[in-house]
Image 1: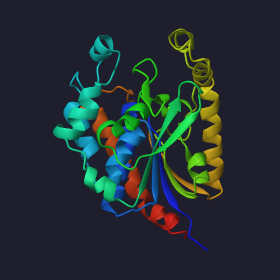
Image 2 (image 1 turned 45 degrees about the vertical axis):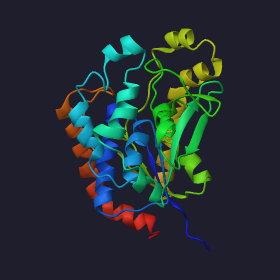
Image 3 (image 1 turned 90 degrees about the vertical axis):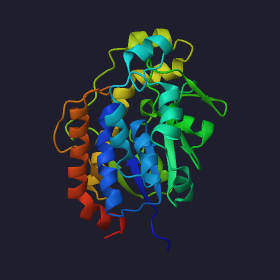
Length: 286
């Protein structure tokens, strides 16, 4: 009988997602290996550096550029319609400023998936990325393109936005793909529950040509909270292992304060270090 494939499921959450980077850097240091990684939004951004084996890359460039208006700013949003500068974040940064190791990523035996939301259907899209060169990195960009803060990304005949809209923590989808033994890295504490989106009236106006997407956005809090309940059930049944923030750090999804970013990253490292032996045993089926 073939052993179960192992996977990492990485939640996003804007700058809150730097918690994931802290956990993943510990995994790299401890030689934690999995068969597949699926990331959503910031989880996809940090997950690709994990697959490429680039320890501390995420925290390095976030601390360096978090106050750079080209990286992320409302000035950029007003001027370009994009909160995060597309050319800066997805061209200059990975190609020259803090190069992404494409060769290592492509040589890895860990499959890498990103989660996006199809704007026309309102359904999740799970994309296996065999490389992130050139326009292929736009799959990561699409996964992290927040509604109202980014343009719709068109790829392979689809119109895409933030994967967290349709599937914030795609553990059920990943298990259906064959990755039965999953470690989930969440970015909210266990007690968290999402509230209705106060921006729904604006979403109706901006995305009036995409009613399925608007409906998915309007129901997102219900779907997310049901997802949390199911994750808790699977965790208690021993079907998955979950790492989540052990304490609350108030950090905005567009955080510019390097001290808060460092605190969130360090919490991810602390929680990751505490979980290493449990993770190792779980992935080995013990």
